[in-house]
Length: 123
Image (cartoon, rainbow, N blue to C red):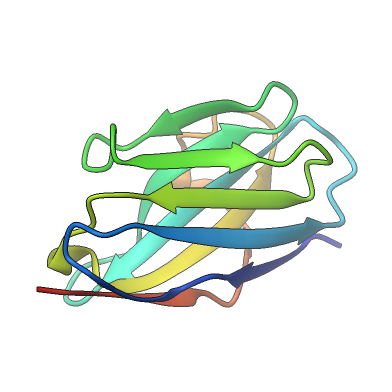
């Protein structure tokens, strides 16, 4: 059974940086995807970055490209999201998620979720 536990959220001023972590367990097959989602006030949950475990190939939504970095540690049991140049409108809950297979950009079919971690960006 896949389990995901996020940590690292907090408060930061606009323009600042934050690193989120997600402890990953129970994924037996590298033919799987991990992703970071966020839900900001008034909007639906959206995927912002994903990574394919077997190759550690990352991909990003245009809204965060160049500012956020998704990565895995060498053991592939911790997922990170390094966020820079944060904006107040990016305040919300951030979740890591997992799904089997490839096509990691298909955010609608992620089926395992962490509990989320709050990110607050003040102006």
